[in-house]
Length: 455
Image (tube, rainbow, N blue to C red; front, side, top):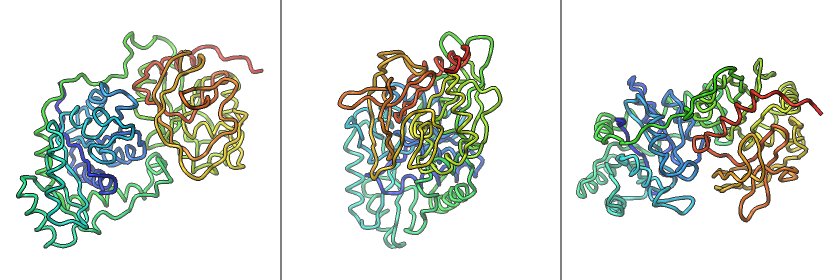
Protein backbone atom coordinates (compact mmCIF):
# COMPACT_ATOMS: atom_id res chain seq x y z
CA UNK A 1 0.00 0.00 0.00
CA UNK A 2 1.21 3.50 -0.84
CA UNK A 3 -0.38 6.62 0.62
CA UNK A 4 0.63 9.77 -1.26
CA UNK A 5 -1.50 12.94 -1.51
CA UNK A 6 -1.63 13.62 -5.24
CA UNK A 7 -3.28 15.42 -8.13
CA UNK A 8 -2.97 15.17 -11.88
CA UNK A 9 -2.86 18.56 -13.62
CA UNK A 10 -4.24 18.50 -17.15
CA UNK A 11 -6.01 20.71 -19.71
CA UNK A 12 -8.45 20.54 -22.61
CA UNK A 13 -5.48 20.76 -24.99
CA UNK A 14 -1.89 21.94 -25.16
CA UNK A 15 -1.26 25.64 -24.55
CA UNK A 16 -3.44 26.27 -21.49
CA UNK A 17 -0.50 26.85 -19.12
CA UNK A 18 -0.30 23.46 -17.43
CA UNK A 19 3.52 23.41 -17.45
CA UNK A 20 4.02 26.77 -15.76
CA UNK A 21 1.28 26.04 -13.24
CA UNK A 22 2.78 22.65 -12.39
CA UNK A 23 6.14 24.24 -11.64
CA UNK A 24 4.51 27.02 -9.67
CA UNK A 25 2.46 24.64 -7.54
CA UNK A 26 5.45 22.49 -6.66
CA UNK A 27 7.61 25.53 -5.89
CA UNK A 28 4.89 27.15 -3.77
CA UNK A 29 4.31 24.00 -1.73
CA UNK A 30 8.04 23.31 -1.38
CA UNK A 31 8.39 26.85 -0.03
CA UNK A 32 6.02 25.75 2.75
CA UNK A 33 8.64 23.10 3.59
CA UNK A 34 6.39 20.34 2.30
CA UNK A 35 8.22 17.40 0.72
CA UNK A 36 6.90 17.36 -2.86
CA UNK A 37 7.47 15.22 -5.96
CA UNK A 38 6.87 15.96 -9.63
CA UNK A 39 6.08 13.67 -12.57
CA UNK A 40 5.51 14.24 -16.29
CA UNK A 41 3.29 11.99 -18.38
CA UNK A 42 4.94 11.07 -21.67
CA UNK A 43 8.55 11.11 -22.90
CA UNK A 44 9.37 14.81 -22.28
CA UNK A 45 12.54 14.75 -20.16
CA UNK A 46 12.81 18.55 -20.19
CA UNK A 47 9.49 19.07 -18.42
CA UNK A 48 10.34 16.29 -15.98
CA UNK A 49 13.69 17.90 -15.17
CA UNK A 50 12.11 21.28 -14.40
CA UNK A 51 9.53 19.58 -12.18
CA UNK A 52 12.45 18.06 -10.32
CA UNK A 53 14.08 21.47 -9.98
CA UNK A 54 10.88 22.87 -8.47
CA UNK A 55 10.40 19.89 -6.17
CA UNK A 56 13.96 19.46 -4.97
CA UNK A 57 13.97 15.75 -5.86
CA UNK A 58 14.31 14.05 -9.26
CA UNK A 59 11.43 14.67 -11.63
CA UNK A 60 10.34 11.51 -13.37
CA UNK A 61 8.54 10.49 -16.55
CA UNK A 62 5.45 8.29 -16.44
CA UNK A 63 5.11 7.04 -20.00
CA UNK A 64 2.78 4.08 -20.56
CA UNK A 65 4.12 3.64 -24.09
CA UNK A 66 7.75 3.39 -22.99
CA UNK A 67 7.34 1.30 -19.84
CA UNK A 68 3.95 -0.38 -20.30
CA UNK A 69 0.73 0.63 -18.51
CA UNK A 70 1.29 -1.83 -15.65
CA UNK A 71 4.54 -0.14 -14.58
CA UNK A 72 3.18 3.41 -14.33
CA UNK A 73 1.71 3.17 -10.82
CA UNK A 74 4.72 1.28 -9.37
CA UNK A 75 7.10 3.89 -10.81
CA UNK A 76 4.95 6.65 -9.34
CA UNK A 77 4.94 4.97 -5.93
CA UNK A 78 8.73 4.63 -6.07
CA UNK A 79 9.34 8.24 -7.08
CA UNK A 80 6.82 9.68 -4.61
CA UNK A 81 8.01 7.69 -1.59
CA UNK A 82 7.92 9.86 1.52
CA UNK A 83 6.37 12.86 -0.25
CA UNK A 84 3.62 14.92 1.34
CA UNK A 85 2.31 15.92 -2.08
CA UNK A 86 2.86 14.63 -5.61
CA UNK A 87 1.91 16.43 -8.80
CA UNK A 88 1.59 14.66 -12.14
CA UNK A 89 1.71 17.00 -15.14
CA UNK A 90 -0.33 15.74 -18.05
CA UNK A 91 0.46 15.84 -21.74
CA UNK A 92 -1.63 17.27 -24.59
CA UNK A 93 -5.37 17.24 -23.82
CA UNK A 94 -6.81 15.17 -20.99
CA UNK A 95 -8.08 12.40 -23.26
CA UNK A 96 -5.41 12.59 -25.97
CA UNK A 97 -2.72 10.06 -26.85
CA UNK A 98 0.22 10.64 -29.20
CA UNK A 99 0.22 6.98 -30.19
CA UNK A 100 -3.55 6.77 -30.62
CA UNK A 101 -4.14 4.61 -27.54
CA UNK A 102 -6.14 6.89 -25.20
CA UNK A 103 -7.58 3.98 -23.22
CA UNK A 104 -4.13 3.19 -21.80
CA UNK A 105 -1.79 6.06 -22.66
CA UNK A 106 -3.72 9.34 -22.20
CA UNK A 107 -3.45 11.58 -19.16
CA UNK A 108 -6.94 10.41 -18.18
CA UNK A 109 -5.83 6.77 -18.30
CA UNK A 110 -2.80 7.52 -16.11
CA UNK A 111 -4.96 9.46 -13.64
CA UNK A 112 -7.33 6.50 -13.40
CA UNK A 113 -4.42 4.08 -12.90
CA UNK A 114 -3.10 6.30 -10.11
CA UNK A 115 -6.58 6.71 -8.56
CA UNK A 116 -5.87 10.41 -8.59
CA UNK A 117 -8.13 13.45 -8.80
CA UNK A 118 -7.64 15.64 -11.87
CA UNK A 119 -7.47 19.41 -11.80
CA UNK A 120 -8.18 20.93 -15.20
CA UNK A 121 -6.30 24.09 -16.20
CA UNK A 122 -8.44 26.16 -18.58
CA UNK A 123 -7.32 29.17 -20.58
CA UNK A 124 -10.42 31.36 -20.35
CA UNK A 125 -9.06 34.43 -22.18
CA UNK A 126 -11.74 34.12 -24.87
CA UNK A 127 -14.41 32.36 -22.83
CA UNK A 128 -17.36 33.22 -20.62
CA UNK A 129 -20.17 30.99 -19.35
CA UNK A 130 -19.19 28.38 -21.94
CA UNK A 131 -16.46 27.30 -19.52
CA UNK A 132 -19.15 25.41 -17.61
CA UNK A 133 -20.20 23.43 -20.68
CA UNK A 134 -16.57 22.66 -21.52
CA UNK A 135 -15.65 21.43 -18.05
CA UNK A 136 -18.93 19.54 -17.62
CA UNK A 137 -18.26 17.76 -20.90
CA UNK A 138 -14.79 16.70 -19.78
CA UNK A 139 -16.21 15.45 -16.47
CA UNK A 140 -19.04 13.49 -18.12
CA UNK A 141 -16.97 11.96 -20.92
CA UNK A 142 -15.45 9.23 -18.74
CA UNK A 143 -17.33 8.06 -15.67
CA UNK A 144 -14.16 6.53 -14.21
CA UNK A 145 -12.36 9.88 -14.20
CA UNK A 146 -12.31 11.92 -11.00
CA UNK A 147 -12.43 15.58 -12.03
CA UNK A 148 -11.74 17.38 -8.78
CA UNK A 149 -11.92 20.97 -10.01
CA UNK A 150 -10.34 23.62 -12.20
CA UNK A 151 -7.79 26.42 -12.19
CA UNK A 152 -8.60 29.34 -14.45
CA UNK A 153 -5.78 30.89 -16.46
CA UNK A 154 -5.60 34.24 -18.31
CA UNK A 155 -8.63 35.74 -16.58
CA UNK A 156 -9.29 39.26 -17.92
CA UNK A 157 -10.71 41.06 -14.87
CA UNK A 158 -12.44 40.62 -11.50
CA UNK A 159 -15.81 40.79 -13.27
CA UNK A 160 -14.72 38.11 -15.74
CA UNK A 161 -13.57 35.90 -12.86
CA UNK A 162 -16.87 36.31 -11.01
CA UNK A 163 -18.79 35.30 -14.16
CA UNK A 164 -16.65 32.19 -14.62
CA UNK A 165 -16.91 31.14 -10.99
CA UNK A 166 -20.69 31.53 -11.03
CA UNK A 167 -21.00 29.41 -14.19
CA UNK A 168 -18.83 26.65 -12.75
CA UNK A 169 -20.64 26.77 -9.42
CA UNK A 170 -23.88 26.07 -11.31
CA UNK A 171 -22.45 22.71 -12.50
CA UNK A 172 -20.80 21.91 -9.16
CA UNK A 173 -17.16 22.26 -10.18
CA UNK A 174 -14.79 23.79 -7.59
CA UNK A 175 -12.38 26.55 -8.67
CA UNK A 176 -9.01 26.32 -6.95
CA UNK A 177 -7.50 29.47 -8.36
CA UNK A 178 -7.66 32.18 -11.02
CA UNK A 179 -4.66 33.79 -12.66
CA UNK A 180 -4.65 37.01 -14.67
CA UNK A 181 -3.16 37.14 -18.14
CA UNK A 182 0.19 38.48 -16.93
CA UNK A 183 0.62 36.26 -13.88
CA UNK A 184 2.31 33.27 -15.55
CA UNK A 185 5.04 35.03 -17.55
CA UNK A 186 7.32 33.09 -19.94
CA UNK A 187 10.31 33.20 -17.59
CA UNK A 188 11.90 29.78 -18.17
CA UNK A 189 15.08 29.49 -20.26
CA UNK A 190 14.47 28.87 -23.96
CA UNK A 191 13.38 25.35 -24.81
CA UNK A 192 16.41 24.85 -27.09
CA UNK A 193 18.61 24.68 -23.97
CA UNK A 194 16.90 21.41 -23.01
CA UNK A 195 17.97 19.94 -19.68
CA UNK A 196 21.17 21.98 -19.46
CA UNK A 197 19.84 24.80 -17.19
CA UNK A 198 18.58 22.19 -14.71
CA UNK A 199 21.62 19.92 -14.93
CA UNK A 200 23.93 22.93 -14.47
CA UNK A 201 21.78 24.41 -11.66
CA UNK A 202 21.51 27.58 -13.68
CA UNK A 203 20.60 30.67 -11.61
CA UNK A 204 18.16 31.90 -14.27
CA UNK A 205 16.23 28.63 -14.17
CA UNK A 206 16.06 28.66 -10.38
CA UNK A 207 14.84 32.27 -10.33
CA UNK A 208 12.20 31.45 -12.94
CA UNK A 209 10.82 28.54 -10.93
CA UNK A 210 10.82 30.66 -7.78
CA UNK A 211 8.91 33.41 -9.58
CA UNK A 212 6.28 30.96 -10.81
CA UNK A 213 5.93 29.66 -7.25
CA UNK A 214 5.29 33.18 -5.95
CA UNK A 215 2.64 33.77 -8.64
CA UNK A 216 0.81 30.55 -7.83
CA UNK A 217 1.00 31.08 -4.07
CA UNK A 218 -0.75 34.43 -4.54
CA UNK A 219 -3.54 33.16 -6.79
CA UNK A 220 -4.27 29.49 -5.98
CA UNK A 221 -5.93 28.21 -2.82
CA UNK A 222 -3.15 25.83 -1.84
CA UNK A 223 -4.90 24.57 1.30
CA UNK A 224 -8.02 23.53 -0.62
CA UNK A 225 -5.87 21.92 -3.28
CA UNK A 226 -3.95 19.97 -0.64
CA UNK A 227 -7.28 18.85 0.80
CA UNK A 228 -8.25 17.44 -2.59
CA UNK A 229 -4.85 15.72 -2.94
CA UNK A 230 -5.16 14.18 0.52
CA UNK A 231 -8.52 12.68 -0.37
CA UNK A 232 -6.87 10.39 -2.93
CA UNK A 233 -7.11 6.76 -1.76
CA UNK A 234 -4.28 4.33 -1.15
CA UNK A 235 -2.49 2.88 -4.13
CA UNK A 236 -2.66 -0.89 -3.95
CA UNK A 237 0.59 -1.49 -5.80
CA UNK A 238 4.10 -2.32 -4.69
CA UNK A 239 6.60 0.43 -5.53
CA UNK A 240 8.98 -0.29 -8.37
CA UNK A 241 12.43 -1.29 -7.21
CA UNK A 242 15.75 -1.08 -9.07
CA UNK A 243 17.11 -4.04 -7.11
CA UNK A 244 17.68 -7.11 -9.31
CA UNK A 245 15.77 -10.24 -8.36
CA UNK A 246 18.97 -12.18 -7.63
CA UNK A 247 20.79 -9.25 -5.99
CA UNK A 248 23.84 -7.39 -7.25
CA UNK A 249 26.96 -9.49 -7.78
CA UNK A 250 29.49 -9.31 -4.98
CA UNK A 251 33.00 -8.04 -5.55
CA UNK A 252 34.28 -5.19 -7.68
CA UNK A 253 32.09 -2.11 -8.13
CA UNK A 254 33.17 -0.68 -11.49
CA UNK A 255 33.04 3.07 -12.02
CA UNK A 256 30.36 3.97 -14.56
CA UNK A 257 30.49 7.58 -15.75
CA UNK A 258 27.01 9.04 -16.31
CA UNK A 259 26.76 12.20 -18.41
CA UNK A 260 25.25 15.04 -16.41
CA UNK A 261 26.12 17.78 -13.98
CA UNK A 262 25.57 18.95 -10.39
CA UNK A 263 21.79 19.10 -10.91
CA UNK A 264 21.31 15.61 -12.32
CA UNK A 265 21.99 13.56 -15.41
CA UNK A 266 20.80 13.45 -19.01
CA UNK A 267 19.23 10.03 -18.31
CA UNK A 268 16.02 9.11 -16.56
CA UNK A 269 16.67 9.01 -12.77
CA UNK A 270 15.95 5.28 -12.77
CA UNK A 271 19.05 4.70 -14.92
CA UNK A 272 21.47 5.65 -12.15
CA UNK A 273 19.39 3.70 -9.61
CA UNK A 274 19.50 0.57 -11.77
CA UNK A 275 23.25 0.88 -12.33
CA UNK A 276 23.92 1.19 -8.60
CA UNK A 277 21.64 -1.75 -7.86
CA UNK A 278 23.49 -3.80 -10.48
CA UNK A 279 26.77 -3.17 -8.67
CA UNK A 280 28.23 -0.02 -10.24
CA UNK A 281 29.71 3.05 -8.65
CA UNK A 282 28.00 5.83 -10.60
CA UNK A 283 30.01 9.04 -11.04
CA UNK A 284 28.84 12.08 -12.98
CA UNK A 285 30.84 13.43 -15.92
CA UNK A 286 29.90 16.78 -17.47
CA UNK A 287 30.45 16.59 -21.26
CA UNK A 288 30.32 20.39 -21.50
CA UNK A 289 32.81 21.23 -18.75
CA UNK A 290 34.84 18.25 -17.51
CA UNK A 291 38.10 17.71 -19.36
CA UNK A 292 38.60 14.11 -18.19
CA UNK A 293 36.57 11.06 -17.35
CA UNK A 294 36.29 10.21 -13.63
CA UNK A 295 39.25 8.26 -12.27
CA UNK A 296 38.95 4.54 -12.93
CA UNK A 297 36.06 4.84 -15.41
CA UNK A 298 35.16 1.44 -16.85
CA UNK A 299 32.02 2.45 -18.77
CA UNK A 300 30.18 5.55 -19.99
CA UNK A 301 26.46 6.29 -20.38
CA UNK A 302 25.24 9.37 -22.25
CA UNK A 303 21.48 9.71 -21.79
CA UNK A 304 18.95 10.95 -24.31
CA UNK A 305 18.41 14.30 -22.58
CA UNK A 306 21.67 15.81 -23.86
CA UNK A 307 20.53 18.55 -26.29
CA UNK A 308 21.77 18.76 -29.87
CA UNK A 309 22.08 22.56 -29.61
CA UNK A 310 25.33 22.38 -27.60
CA UNK A 311 27.45 21.06 -30.47
CA UNK A 312 29.98 23.91 -30.20
CA UNK A 313 30.60 23.31 -26.50
CA UNK A 314 30.86 19.55 -26.97
CA UNK A 315 33.33 20.02 -29.81
CA UNK A 316 35.42 22.55 -27.91
CA UNK A 317 35.99 20.10 -25.06
CA UNK A 318 38.72 18.28 -26.98
CA UNK A 319 40.38 16.62 -24.00
CA UNK A 320 37.20 14.86 -22.99
CA UNK A 321 36.51 13.88 -26.61
CA UNK A 322 39.94 12.21 -26.76
CA UNK A 323 39.32 10.43 -23.44
CA UNK A 324 35.96 9.10 -24.64
CA UNK A 325 37.51 7.89 -27.91
CA UNK A 326 40.24 6.07 -26.00
CA UNK A 327 37.70 4.44 -23.67
CA UNK A 328 35.77 3.15 -26.68
CA UNK A 329 38.92 2.05 -28.52
CA UNK A 330 39.90 -0.21 -25.64
CA UNK A 331 36.55 -1.99 -25.83
CA UNK A 332 35.01 -0.50 -22.71
CA UNK A 333 31.20 -0.24 -22.82
CA UNK A 334 29.82 3.08 -24.02
CA UNK A 335 26.07 3.59 -24.35
CA UNK A 336 25.01 6.77 -26.14
CA UNK A 337 21.35 7.72 -26.62
CA UNK A 338 19.82 10.61 -28.56
CA UNK A 339 22.36 13.38 -29.17
CA UNK A 340 24.98 11.19 -27.49
CA UNK A 341 25.19 9.36 -30.82
CA UNK A 342 26.07 12.65 -32.54
CA UNK A 343 28.77 13.36 -29.94
CA UNK A 344 30.46 10.06 -30.78
CA UNK A 345 30.48 10.82 -34.53
CA UNK A 346 33.41 12.17 -36.51
CA UNK A 347 31.81 15.59 -36.82
CA UNK A 348 28.52 17.45 -36.45
CA UNK A 349 27.74 20.44 -38.67
CA UNK A 350 31.43 20.67 -39.54
CA UNK A 351 32.56 20.64 -35.89
CA UNK A 352 34.86 17.80 -34.78
CA UNK A 353 33.36 15.43 -32.22
CA UNK A 354 34.78 12.36 -30.49
CA UNK A 355 35.50 10.43 -33.69
CA UNK A 356 34.46 7.08 -32.24
CA UNK A 357 32.07 6.41 -35.14
CA UNK A 358 32.90 6.85 -38.81
CA UNK A 359 29.85 9.02 -39.49
CA UNK A 360 29.03 12.68 -40.02
CA UNK A 361 26.08 14.50 -38.48
CA UNK A 362 24.14 17.40 -40.00
CA UNK A 363 21.29 19.47 -38.60
CA UNK A 364 18.14 19.78 -40.66
CA UNK A 365 14.92 21.75 -40.46
CA UNK A 366 12.10 20.02 -38.64
CA UNK A 367 12.09 17.28 -36.04
CA UNK A 368 11.89 13.52 -36.23
CA UNK A 369 9.55 12.65 -33.37
CA UNK A 370 7.80 9.47 -32.35
CA UNK A 371 7.86 6.08 -30.68
CA UNK A 372 9.49 3.05 -32.25
CA UNK A 373 9.22 -0.63 -31.32
CA UNK A 374 12.73 -1.78 -32.10
CA UNK A 375 14.51 -5.12 -32.34
CA UNK A 376 18.20 -5.72 -31.72
CA UNK A 377 19.74 -7.26 -34.88
CA UNK A 378 22.66 -8.72 -32.90
CA UNK A 379 24.19 -9.00 -29.45
CA UNK A 380 25.46 -5.82 -27.81
CA UNK A 381 26.09 -4.32 -24.40
CA UNK A 382 22.43 -3.20 -24.42
CA UNK A 383 20.55 -6.30 -25.58
CA UNK A 384 20.73 -9.81 -26.91
CA UNK A 385 19.94 -10.44 -30.57
CA UNK A 386 16.19 -10.48 -31.11
CA UNK A 387 15.36 -8.50 -27.96
CA UNK A 388 12.73 -5.78 -28.42
CA UNK A 389 12.34 -2.38 -26.79
CA UNK A 390 10.04 0.59 -27.17
CA UNK A 391 11.94 3.86 -27.44
CA UNK A 392 11.30 7.47 -28.31
CA UNK A 393 13.02 9.60 -30.97
CA UNK A 394 13.19 13.38 -31.05
CA UNK A 395 15.96 14.91 -33.11
CA UNK A 396 16.71 17.35 -35.91
CA UNK A 397 20.24 16.24 -36.77
CA UNK A 398 20.84 13.06 -38.76
CA UNK A 399 23.91 10.91 -39.36
CA UNK A 400 25.41 9.70 -42.61
CA UNK A 401 25.51 6.76 -42.74
CA UNK A 402 22.40 6.10 -40.67
CA UNK A 403 23.85 2.83 -39.34
CA UNK A 404 27.18 1.07 -39.08
CA UNK A 405 28.17 -2.38 -40.28
CA UNK A 406 26.45 -3.61 -37.13
CA UNK A 407 23.26 -1.62 -36.51
CA UNK A 408 21.91 -0.89 -33.06
CA UNK A 409 18.23 -1.37 -33.93
CA UNK A 410 15.82 -2.13 -36.70
CA UNK A 411 12.07 -1.59 -36.84
CA UNK A 412 9.21 -2.18 -39.23
CA UNK A 413 9.04 0.34 -42.04
CA UNK A 414 12.45 1.87 -41.37
CA UNK A 415 16.06 1.28 -42.30
CA UNK A 416 18.45 -0.11 -39.63
CA UNK A 417 19.63 2.62 -37.26
CA UNK A 418 22.55 3.25 -34.92
CA UNK A 419 25.96 1.74 -34.37
CA UNK A 420 27.40 -1.23 -32.48
CA UNK A 421 31.18 -1.34 -32.44
CA UNK A 422 33.24 -3.19 -29.84
CA UNK A 423 31.60 -2.13 -26.56
CA UNK A 424 29.81 0.86 -28.08
CA UNK A 425 26.04 1.00 -28.54
CA UNK A 426 24.92 4.34 -30.00
CA UNK A 427 21.47 5.26 -31.28
CA UNK A 428 19.07 8.19 -31.40
CA UNK A 429 16.40 5.92 -29.96
CA UNK A 430 15.85 6.54 -26.22
CA UNK A 431 14.32 3.68 -24.20
CA UNK A 432 13.34 3.90 -20.54
CA UNK A 433 15.66 1.60 -18.60
CA UNK A 434 13.05 0.85 -15.92
CA UNK A 435 11.24 -1.22 -18.53
CA UNK A 436 14.49 -2.97 -19.47
CA UNK A 437 16.55 -3.40 -16.28
CA UNK A 438 18.71 -5.98 -18.03
CA UNK A 439 20.51 -3.10 -19.77
CA UNK A 440 22.09 -2.03 -16.49
CA UNK A 441 23.06 -5.60 -15.62
CA UNK A 442 24.66 -6.17 -19.03
CA UNK A 443 26.56 -2.89 -18.83
CA UNK A 444 27.97 -3.60 -15.37
CA UNK A 445 28.96 -7.13 -16.39
CA UNK A 446 30.77 -5.74 -19.44
CA UNK A 447 32.48 -3.09 -17.29
CA UNK A 448 33.89 -5.74 -14.99
CA UNK A 449 35.14 -7.93 -17.85
CA UNK A 450 38.73 -7.47 -19.11
CA UNK A 451 39.14 -4.80 -21.76
CA UNK A 452 39.86 -5.70 -25.38
CA UNK A 453 43.35 -5.19 -26.70
CA UNK A 454 43.34 -2.10 -28.97
CA UNK A 455 43.48 -2.86 -32.66
